[in-house]
Amino acid sequence: MIVVEIASPTTRLTDVNDKVELYSRIASIGHDLVIEQDQHRVIDHGRGPSGGVEPRILREGGMIMEPPGIPLALADLYRDTTLGNAAPQLADR
Image 1 (cartoon, rainbow, N blue to C red):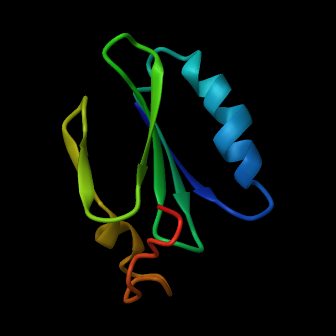
Image 2: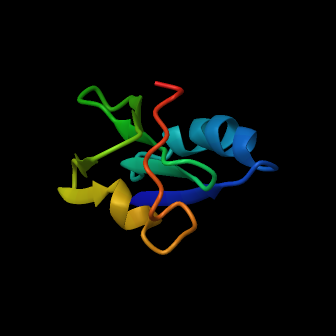
Image 3: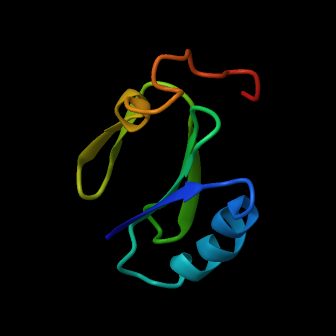
């Protein structure tokens, strides 16, 4: 199962802290994606080989969510938004 959340300024800390802890305890959740709405950035809290949660930050390009093998491209996520034509922000790399 994949959980997708859109972070907002008022819920961001909850989305990346409290919910990650909660979702990490549910074995059927393989990925918890937090999509930022004010910049090109997705935080993937995915399961590692040991079953623990391993966060990964995606700021450009894409990735394959394993399992289940679903491709994820930042350009697709932001296509119809005000950030859709903007270059990815790399300042916080």
